[in-house]
Image (cartoon, rainbow, N blue to C red; front, side, top):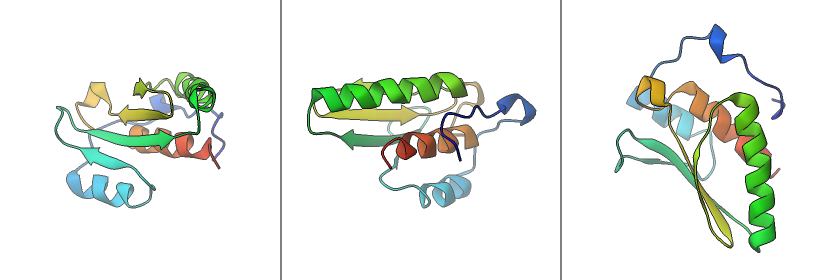
Length: 110
């Protein structure tokens, strides 16, 4: 997967994934968790960095990927970390789009 290649989501019917589908997809991603304390549930990961400069560099790269994919996460930015939360508002839950973007965000650091 090329992280900067736009995926055409308009050709796919998006839907909220089932609990079983979410668990299966979560097993494929390192460090991502399911936060069910919010409604709707979100995929969440905390990325850690050595300093603020590295954190902001990651946030800027993530913002470009999110813009290209037209799928924008909630971010909580701190000195040495960025917490990323994903869900798909128009389906009221977690969709395949969330997992695709999560994998693209992870690829920024490989």
